[in-house]
Length: 323
Image (cartoon, rainbow, N blue to C red; front, top):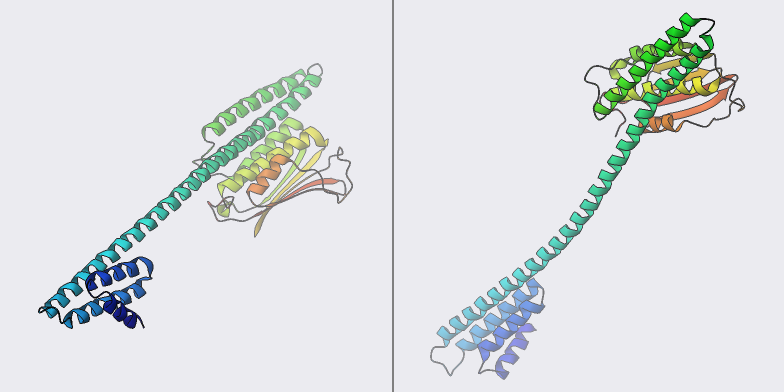
């Protein structure tokens, strides 16, 4: 069908035959899909060749046919290259625009990530300062209040409590300095949770006079330093809260380690007015630590006891919070 159309055009405009088919080729290249335009070019070149060969007006019909066919094919080829180049430029401009959009999105994401990182670091710093200074200051206040009551009847014991308070405050100051200095790094040495908890409990008992039963059944080789640090701070915060608010005389701390790490802190405090089995308001600081470790936190009354239960999934060493 296309060939018939070309032959009709050939007979209608026989004087400018090569130019006619060249224009048809260029239109085909510009407006038709690639494969279809190539078919049109082939038909036009063949039509030019046939018509020039059988043109009785020229003595050099074959030579003109070859030359005109070659020119038609060559110009059509350049037209195809030009169209390809234009398509390539359009694709390049499109890719550049897409890249600019992605770069803008990436810059926004980077800024947001930096903001969130700074916010998280500020929250962490605030929490560490609260846990470190809060525990030391509270214990020191309790000791000094007790010393004030004993200063007349037992001056020697009162002086000892004051000295303990001074020592505790110095430790708090040193811990604060270390925490600020090494906030973003784990301690270079191995962290021993059992030892650290024992020291904490001994210091707490000495300062408050509360009886603390520490039960540790945990193998530390599979527990990351990050998890150990959070557990220590949770116990420290809990003891501080008990000494300040619970009016307890006995505390039991149980730490076990199987498929999960389970921490139970029980006290016989009388200041809580909730019923047995009822959930109690949770400490925001402890709650944030447990959430960071992807654990579960329960705080409730069980009979005459107030119970804090923390369950933490066991991660491989170095994976900590599972970030």
